[in-house]
Image (cartoon, rainbow, N blue to C red; front, top):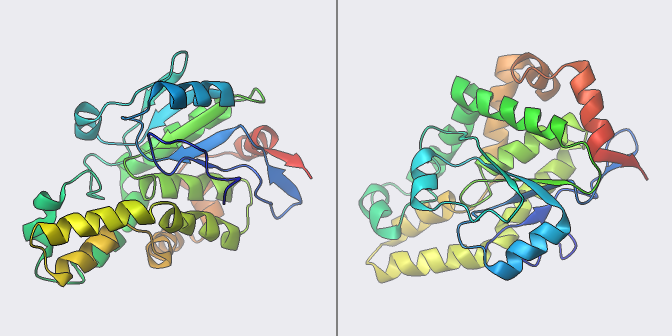
Length: 264
């Protein structure tokens, strides 16, 4: 995990998507694509680190409200692309413990059920489909080696997690490897989750609320499975979804592999 997690101290969940194997014997390139949580607190040291790393594009998957409340700190010379996946923060990762208190104190399955629906919505909604089409459009322009595209949302787990799922699937990375990358968020963000649970309890929250917060602020194989099930129902398979719904042609898929993978 050390090789995959970037040493960013003023943000969280900054991770490399390089080094993953594909089904056809290639490996995803380093210094080409990063996933992360929010960039609103980036200090000068971390900004310079990302510049030196090769950061070229910052793609923001958050909602308009999230961007207005917590604008990205964009390093000098980096192109910022606002590309909201959801019309609002359905994942609720930008809400405070107080805002969630009343919503989550009754049903311990509220958070879990909510997240399952978020993942289905990401697959089904035209707005989200258009956002991921724009994501791939940007990926296809990022041709120069050493130039890095970073995509992120608030926590770097749901909207970003699905972006990583689509991207790695397009490169023919095996499903078990994609799931491993997806679940790595729980290891990376466990301290942040612990802080949120502590805040909920300090604010008088009961254990039902704690369970719901844990569901909202973590990832689960069940969430990704809900998305995959929705994809299969809609298109038959993820490769079909990439072509039929996200409009990736055979040439696009070949270009993505050329840009983002290399022989071992």
